[in-house]
Length: 116
Length: 110
Image (cartoon, rainbow over all chains, first blue to last red; front, side, top):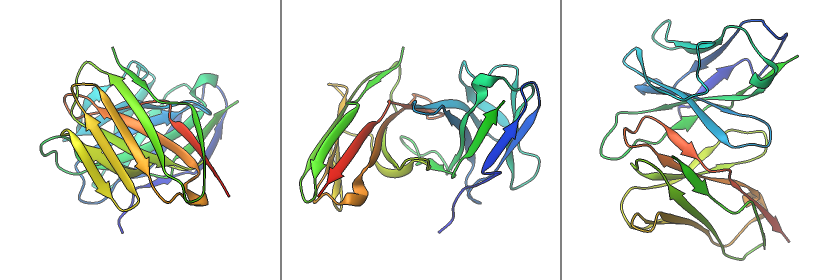
């Protein structure tokens, strides 16, 4: 069964450093998403991406964040200058074509980011 | 604004039935998902409702009333492996984002 994959599974970085989190969405999916979950808190939407551009972004997704689809398979989230409060689990998700309503978003296993 | 409410914790015993409620007030609505999340793992899809009524899938059923801003997830014949968090998530009007509740942690005991 196709699945979303993410690398690395765990990333430790120093405050102020740049990190890139990588995702390979399900191959025939067209919509890509990033969410984050701070330990013990709810899953929060960051950004959605379709047709090589951002469809929607939340207030969390400020100028420190960017997304890219550098090739036909990868989808990346870059945090330019990490802060302590960026420590969280970051989930990538993908979904197929929108029909009436919404298509199911399938989540990857996550990257645990720890900022020291 | 967006507000999605679920109970924080529930407990039940093996073989029982449990109903997890979710109420929402959101600026747009394009369906409601239920996901299961085991500790330290990714959310996994359980069900999707966009029209009023009950959707049944094996031991799991989900109900939606759009006029009441209300959904529930019904789990039957509970098993120990059902111990997890259950996340209610509303799809925004454009279908471009999921807005999650805080989740309900279900503990199943023998």
